[in-house]
Image (tube, rainbow, N blue to C red; front, top):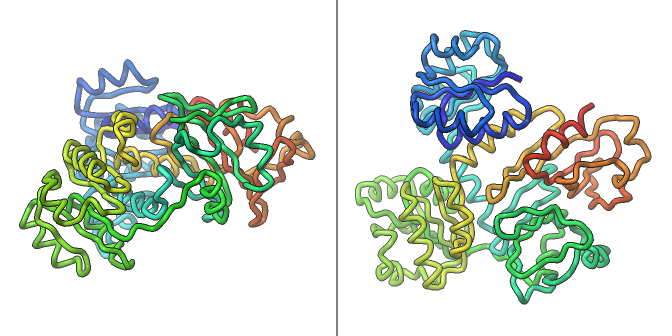
Length: 448
């Protein structure tokens, strides 16, 4: 597929790298000469310096022969004009990133439908939705749902006192009759491993596992953990993300306190938030926050527009006894470092937006995609085709890619946790954890 991407920031560069590695022909356009020169050395894509909202530049990029157009600059107007031009050139599929909430309302004169866009994505809204998804699992550092919520992927950190610390994959397999799950990856340092029989789980590792959603309490019991829904939440930052999260949390029986240092912004928030306690404070003023009880908070969500404030306020909260922190970070390369410093969850709105776009691009046999931000890996939900060599063959004989693993099989609303003896059937949904360089092989494996 031929793809034009306008905007070479974090979203555009991440999309360019992912899609080019999967064999797509990618053209990347941006006005920043220095940024383009840097990326053309790093990525296997065609680069063009220019305005993506210019018909001349788009024609130079081959817009007439393009299958998919993605506009993800930091300027809404550029993205929308570029997308309108793509429609005039009859590009079949068009995606645009916007920050202005007005474009997302059904009654707007320039909404998704009226602009003829397949996907109109707002990073702040995607970020808020991700936070709300993670709120209730206090012990997990990552959480994804597949197969309409029947299957979950969970991330847990393994401490020295964890019952599975020191066990091999083979030994864990022997208790699978009681605890039905699959460990699909071990994160050790900066490395992600696809575990095999002799691999040992060590203290300090992080693991990703798949299980039936109904099995979460049993899995956490085995790991000597117990997730609880938070009762007291502090939100640092009253911008778009903070206000969206607070508004959604008001429907629950939760003590929500939103910290915003701008008094004018606090006044505006008071007009839309009914149950949230608004605190006109600096998110890094630990004395004032301690007086408000941040040390007794179950969860602190730091989502200002300033990475430094988010990082420092999260570290201060953890230092004073906050149970868990979710931290917004616009520099995704900092995420592994933050987790080493004790920040529980670091989320990048730009990478989350890129992941949402990748889900749209990889339709067809792929039903869902989840990006694992901490490592170069993804989780795919794919449909099993009717292939002759699949019939009556156990998984262990199918030569599945080494750098990927099947975590669950969904067959007619029944969830199977696979073993080497599991036999795939046509139209099964399979949940797969794959390191990024194995994704093309996985897609080829499931190609009809």
